[in-house]
Image 1 (cartoon, rainbow, N blue to C red):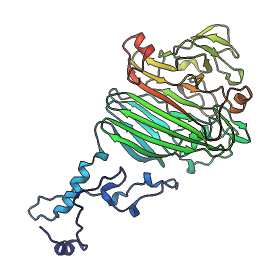
Image 2: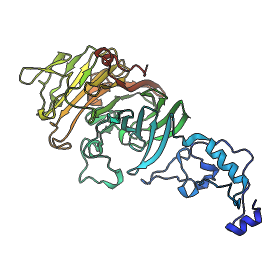
Image 3: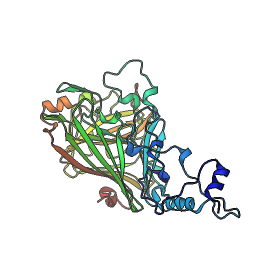
Image 4: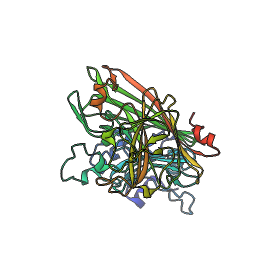
Length: 439
């Protein structure tokens, strides 16, 4: 065994005796290095809370060889290394987490045997990836723009509706405290789809076990006095993402708001002939949101699934169309009392389903683009649909005028639960119900 003096002679620094029992470290305290070694800012220049700081790779321990003939490494360091290895925060099986930087954004992946869900913490907690691992099928749509680093892209002029579409990478956004078009209400100008989808959220890992993982995200809005907290979790053996959220009014007066979720589905999952399943409801179209390339007659109220076409024909909205249609349809489904929907691909025998609180999200926005979204920002090049649970029709100020907006008084909190799942399609009934593991 090399003693302390010999170690210093070999390596120019004294040996360090490891503690007899390695302390339980959180998922960022790799190998017990002092907190002064923490990386405390992201590549974007944003401060990282101490609970999220990580250690530079130069500080990580490499595997120590203790059985060589020369026995160069002291047993104390071997004990430290073994303690590090037996703590499984770097687990590569069961439910697991990975934190990383992608295109300058802090991201975290939640993964189990069936799902991999990538969340962009620095951009609204957007869900960028929702991958079904057994079949290597991605469900989230990605826009041609991709994920643009916010500090590096300077628009030539600010958009009146806000910067959302300049940075819209596809995937799944949270809309809060405004859904849809830009709005000015109670003195606050809020851009398209709200504030939180462009803000960096802080996060902490609240559960990290082979059987279950959970991450807590939180953010405070800038132009409104809200504090949002969101928990995302996966359980072993289940292809369902569970979401628990709460919003608190930290102001001293009543504040109106809208709230919604904006998942967009695309290829390779989405294709012509997919089926859209929703409970009994009505189809509403609004002239303000009827594109020139829409198939649908504006300002109608029809029974699901058949809408009235612009030429008087019947349009079945429960079957996705071909890219050759060249259409861009927007409909608002209302009267839903059982908050769930499913989209199935008969060829792949796979489905995507979602549960949401229909008593709060009273509308299910249905966006269909079959290469018909012309001009900015999609230029006739995209194929996707979006099914978006929302508390109101577009525009907070308009919703407030109609008495449809949500409202919280000083200090009040509103909590919700949602879930999204991938499921195997066995029959029409299983497709219609779906979501078996999420319940």
